[in-house]
Every structure is written in C-alpha cells, then in structure tokens.
Length: 253
Image (cartoon, rainbow, N blue to C red; front, side, top):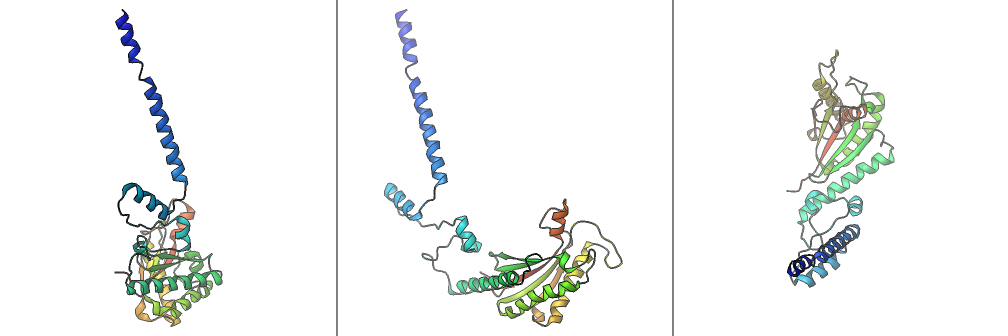
C-alpha cells in the first residue's frame, strides 16, 4: 500500500510545468503584441539581427503608409533603395517625366476647383494617368451630346494636356455606363451610348487643336468595366463616366 501511494504522489510532481508553460506562452504573446505596435528602426534591426546571427544582412527598404502617401512610388520601384541600388538613367528620366505630368494635372484640377467633376488617378506601375470625368458634368441622361458647361470643364483639362503633350505618348478616351438597359432614338444600347460619348469627347479634343491628332483615340466599354457596384444608385453614378487614359511618353521596360 505504501508503494502505491508513493507512485500516486510522484505522478503529480510535474504539474508545475503546465503552469510554467502557460506563463511563457502568455509572455511570448505579450511581447509579440508590443512588437506589432512599435516602429522598427531598420538600421538598429539589422545591427541586432547581425550581432545575433553573425550573417550579413541584405537591406530591404521598409515603406510605411505615411511615407508612401507623401512620396508615392510606382510598383516597380517599391523594392528599390535609391541609395543602394543603381537605377538606369533612362528609368529615372521616365519616372520624373511621369511625376511632372501627374503633378501638373493634379495642380490644375485643384486650382480651377474641378474636384467635384474630375479627378486624376496615377497608375505608377505603367506610368499612366486616368483623368476621370463624371458623366453628369458632360452629358444629360441617355445622351451623348456634350453639355455647355462641359465645354469649359473639358477645355481646362485639354488645354493643360496640350501644354504637356511633349510628356504624353497617347490619350485614350473611354466611355463607360452603368448596367441599366437603354434604348432610345440615338442609342440602341449601352454599347452605342458609351462609344458615342467617347467619340463626342474625342471630337471636342480634335476641334480644340491643342493635341496632335495622332495622340488621341476613343473606345466604348458599355457597362462591362465598372469601378463600383451597380446595385446602388451611388455605385451606378460612379460607373457612368468618361476616362482620359493618358500614357506617359515612355514606360519602364
């Protein structure tokens, strides 16, 4: 009987390890949370890891949300550290030309209070700008005839593009609609409406004489390239648009 009691006593001797393991796990979780909330200094982090491992560290730049917002960088450049990586002279020139064009368009829209009717969207990966116009400032519902107020709005932007066309290789004017069916005396469906709207904008650009004819094209996409849901009135309003897709003079190869 004494032997049996001794065996039972010895079986509970390791229970403290369960408590210790739980404590270590909680501490690990605590320090992981502290780490996730902290701002890491890349230089200090490399020094710490290097001292622990004794291995050389390959520098990978860390781009925070705040820095990226103030200094937008195209996708191809996000893993490049200008201080340690050699960019070709041609790539630097292409990127700077693109930024110059983007800043000129954005400044012009701001200075002329066109934010309600137009916006400029930079596509850094392809060095392309999208100048997006709401259809409500350009056309009446179901129509492809430019409104009188559209002449001034488009005229501002077209004039700016003309002054900067040395930085531009091509401007593709895209017509887009929502998914509501349409059939009237002018347009059989959304395909025709989108094409005619794009063509109307193209005619305006041509008649302005500000941009070389060989740098302009027009295309209609109907309802098939939405930028928002068509299940709400707000989303449909966003999808009814005319986009000026402005390709920079060169692209990064």
